[in-house]
Image 1 (tube, rainbow, N blue to C red):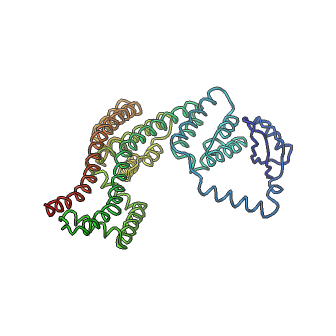
Image 2 (image 1 turned 180 degrees about the vertical axis):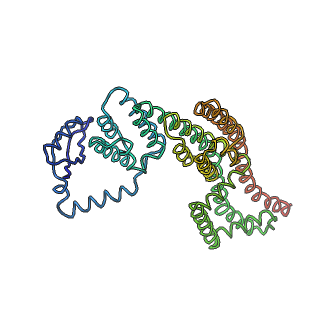
Image 3 (image 1 turned 90 degrees about the vertical axis):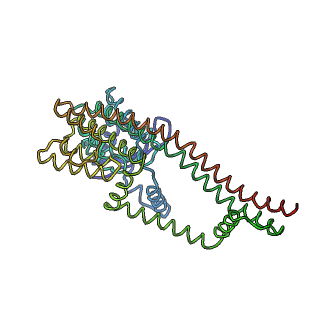
Length: 415
């Protein structure tokens, strides 16, 4: 079917263009009018792309820009789901709603995806099927919720649940980032201060003490030797080796076995291991509860929940339990056999299965562990802040001590 490129004026007065498939220009204009768009210019796609080197260069530039486009994050997806739910609930046609969302979208990849999804839906494709063609924009969780809402005729309710779920996930992620962001930033600053003083400040004072003929104390001599080492070619080789090691660890972590090994070690870390486990438990309970409440089959809900666990060990445990559930074993029994999730969560899940309110019980478990994560984040932050201050003070104090010790030796010689 021929493809036409329509140029029209957007809500804010800006010029926009989109593609539409139709048998002829008149049908293309009819399709556009159904979506509330009045085309100012309509050309066949072949005519628009035929031409010269400037057109080819623009196409190449467009393809290069696509490589560096940023996919939407959890926050952007939550805002999209919330706005789309409000529009659908207000009775706005889904195609018109998608067009409005596309016109308001600032991320190029997200805008292009919504425009194409709108065209597909306008041609009779289901919304869930249309968004499945954009895996970089819509994850399995969003797709499953939309498909369940369409199947049950409650798309607006499904989108509201999806928006709430994504907002809660974003809030949980921000809590973790907030807990780790401050100490990491302080540690980086402390390392940079130490390197700057060691490389640039210590050699200056060392030259002064050498001219005075002062004998350097052992601690000062140690820092002088370290300064010489950092300013030599050995430091470059060491930095290269460190970067190579980090790259190799990243490549190893990208493999399934490597991720299992590293994620297992992370779960055994003091304090942080417990924080990772509670975060993964909260995410699993929240997502699984929302999916089953929306009408997603339990096996599909478990598969999607495993993808969002954030830890390979917990993800594999959920997938293994999924296979056991498929054989007729209760979900709580299957998860208990994996010995990964906390006992409290598993006991609540078993009670939910017995009473027939599993989704409601898991929602309460998610609330509990999200509160626990918040409290633990505050506790970690309160402990790490003074620790980082002590580290920075120790680094600066050590440099100053190394500088002042030779002065005492010089004063003794003068006396």
